[in-house]
Amino acid sequence: MFQVEQYKGSLEEQYKFLSKQLAALLEGETDNVANLSNASALLNQFLNDVNWVGFYLWKEEELILGPFQGLPACVRIKSGKGVCGTVAQNKETLRVEDVHQFPGHIACDAASNSEIVVPIIVNDTLYGVLDIDSPSKNRFSEVDEKGLELFVSTLQNYLTK
Picture 1 (cartoon, rainbow, N blue to C red):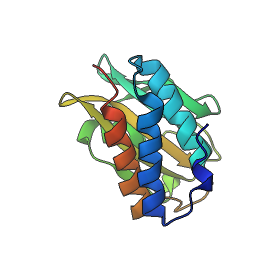
Picture 2 (cartoon, rainbow, N blue to C red; picture 1 turned 30 degrees about the vertical axis):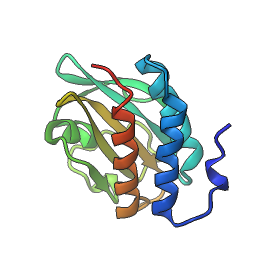
Picture 3 (cartoon, rainbow, N blue to C red; picture 1 turned 60 degrees about the horizontal axis):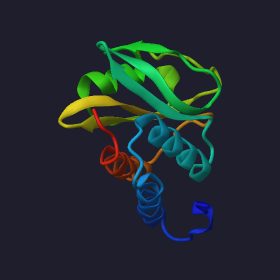
Picture 4 (tube, helix red, strand yellow; picture 1 turned 45 degrees about the vertical axis):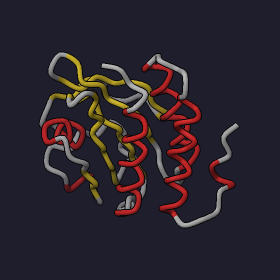
C-alpha cells in the first residue's frame, strides 16, 4: 500500500513523491470515477489539517459533486459562485486564507476556514476542480499550491473526457 507519510523530505519533495504514487496507483485504470476516488483518498491520507478533499466535475454548465473524502457536501455549484465556481470560471488555482472573507463563499461545512481549489483541464477543456478545505485559517502555502497543481497535472493524464 502507499505509505506517503513515511517519506521524509522537503514538502516539495513529498509532493513529487505523492504525484509518482498517484501515477502508480492509476496506471492501467481507465474508469474516471475509480481514478478520482483513489486520488481523493490518497490526498486525504497525505494531507494533515484538512476536513474535505474531493472533486467537482463540470457538467451541463455547472460543477457537480464527484468523488470525495469528508462530510456530505453541496451538490451543484454554478460557474462564478464561491471559490470552486470562481476557479471553474477563471481556470486558475485559488488559495483562500479565510473563506469567510471570500465574497459569495458557499459554506458546505461551517468548520472550514481555508480552502484551495485547482482546475482540472482535459483536452483543453474544463473537466472539473480539486477542492480541499481546512478547519485552520491560512492552511495552504505556495508550496501546497505548486504541489497540488503537480498532483492535478499527473491526474489529468489518467482522465478521459
